[in-house]
Image 1 (cartoon, rainbow, N blue to C red):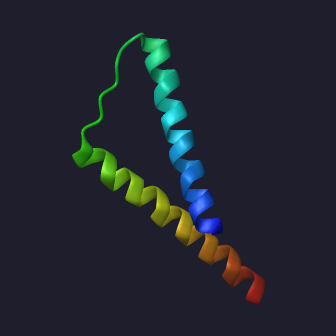
Image 2 (cartoon, rainbow, N blue to C red; image 1 turned 90 degrees about the horizontal axis):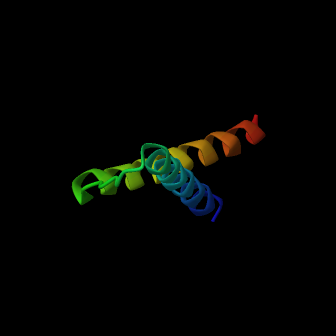
Length: 60
């Protein structure tokens, strides 16, 4: 459950950064699905890796 929350947080942060970039440049930012889906998978992979690393540090 912690991994899911962390992954969602990373995705929300990424969307917020794109939103502010679009506000600053006063333009539309279009991301094709072929790029967006791997980025979402990457966010959850990084979240899973970070969660597993924190769990392993507690065992030592």
